[in-house]
Amino acid sequence: MNVFLQNLWLSLPIPAFLIDPGDVLVEANPAAESFLNSSARSLRGTPVFDTLAIDAPLDDNIGRVRSEQASLFMNNVDVGGGNLAPVSCNIQIAPMSNMPGFVLMLMEPRVLADRLGRSLSVKSAAKSAIGMAEMLAHEIKNPLAGITGAAQLLSMNLAPEDAELTDLIVSETRRILALLEQVEQFGNLRPPARRAVNIHDLLDRARKSAAVGFAAHMTIAELYDPSLPSTFVDSDQMVQVFLNLLKNAAEASKGSPGQITIRTFYDMSLRLRRKDKTATLPLNVEIIDDGPGLPPEIAQDVFEPFVSGRENGTGLGLALVSKIISDHDGWVSVDSIPGRTVFRISLPVAPKQAEEQ
Image 1 (cartoon, rainbow, N blue to C red):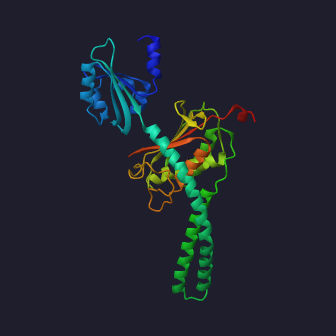
Image 2: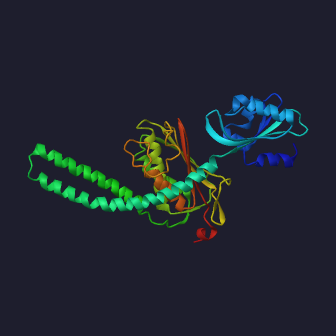
Image 3: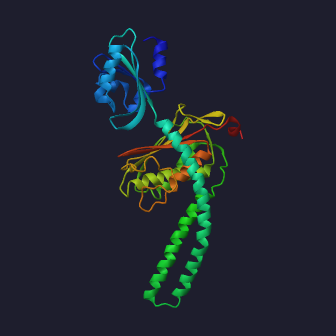
């Protein structure tokens, strides 16, 4: 393979596999390695049908491509393999010129497009929830204060055994008030005061707070890329995002010891089009836990307001994360299978003028 073709193969942004006449994988490009979380060396020489679980008659289709010497497309096909959760992909299979029996298989995962669509709907839902949250908090807090005061007055003239009931009223109304304060925080979030910051400084603040509090029973590992440039965010709001995600990861363990991994890396592949410009989001933060994974029935909707997998959860924590990241022109996503849940945040690089200030 000459240098140009080799560079072209390495630069393909989608998973690509070269399959020999015996249906054995001969080569996999870097995007395929990342897709399957396996090295090209380990994939070479393995039967394609043992490596990839494709919800389509792959063997028949590869046979048709060989016999007809024509490309074939398969759309919206679920692809899995190893520990990979099924991912909807568009697949193209094409015969290799001057290489009888060899075929090239390209996969275009649809997960990114699907998530971007959900991201837009989540942002819209969050805005609607904000208005409702502000209205409900205002309308409910005043009568609750009256109920609390009346219960406290009644308890002054009651026997101790009867006062337990008024104490219950007071404690429950205070619990509801605390919930309303959280709702108000969700509804009244100020616009971000953005400046150039080192993302690792913010992660360290959140990690230290988590390690002495809600994540004291967990091991927190760091896989940082020290060469990352500055990002352009509101420090306090971004620390709140990291704390929410770390708390979510810690609660997934349900009190059992486990590990949370914080990973940072640089990836230029994600570009989002907004209005008349395209934004690149190369700074990535992943918060990974080894808990049981998200319940399948809510896995696609965890960033929606009032969606929670916990019995007493409010469903506002991840919705708040989504809103903050959207306000910072970033993107948040989640991948979850039993034993591994990954929340990824993608952010822009700070503009040069912001770093010079």
